Image (tube, rainbow, N blue to C red; front, side, top):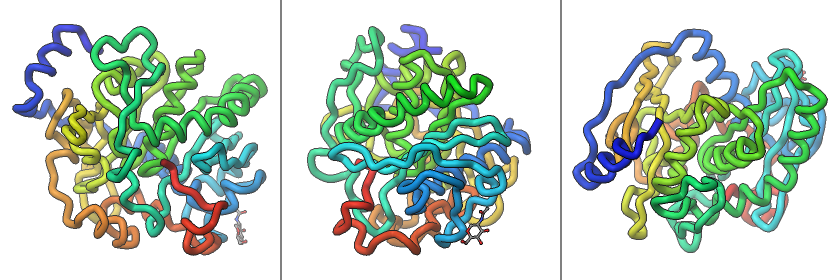
Length: 333
Ligand SMILES: *[C@@H]1O[C@H](CO)[C@@H](O)[C@H](O)[C@H]1NC(C)=O
């Protein structure tokens, strides 16, 4: 969707923050139900069993809530903890909704909340994700997310390819919350680059790289699958890293599906579809979080980052504590 003229204009507008484009409210109740279902698939990746053993998915047994996943009889066909990043996730099939779902676990709220703003993870590395469309910056992505994605891909790519062959009518969806959202979006990009059609549903996803990768992911939709990047009210995590941190140009792909309501049940009129340009201050990006980053993450899931159509990271009863001391629990970066 980016013409080179629009791209140049966006770059010129950078620094003075491009004016927010129209905020549409176009979501139907059926789309809202679909978002709710995938938020539950993303949340289910916080449940210990779903990312440690294959079989029927269950969140309620660990204090979480994924009734739409449980009632669909979704089955994990490959639970994994991949590579040196120990990235946790699962590949599941859902015969009711005809889906192959890949989900990546986000950072456990209490483990390493400031990962995304600390140390080497803030570095950007050149990636090969954008193919030849890396004219601006070499397709720079967040080093930590990229490493996690590559670890996960070793498991996910062959598993999804086999599952898709067995179930040719199923749609492939990648999803995740927080850091898991960023990693799952890069994973979706990788699967698309291998020729698959993949829908991406991310919730509270931090920025994953800068201009080339954002434009590239945007350009893949809808021909290679749809992009649904969901943010909630004044959640601070999608605002990070800030646009200019580390002398880089961190950015998001659009549109953004912004839940413009702090607490309570979300209805279609609370959803704003935000079309924007590079370095936009529209949607969530234009809000001020009620909490500092650390405060937000330690708020225990009642602050904006923890609420995506319900409490998204409710599973915790089986998670080792402290997670950082246990190799079996992980962080997504
Ligand atoms: C999930 O686990 C709980 C507790 O073990 C059990 O009561 C419930 O029936 C399970 N739900 C599904 C859908 O299997």
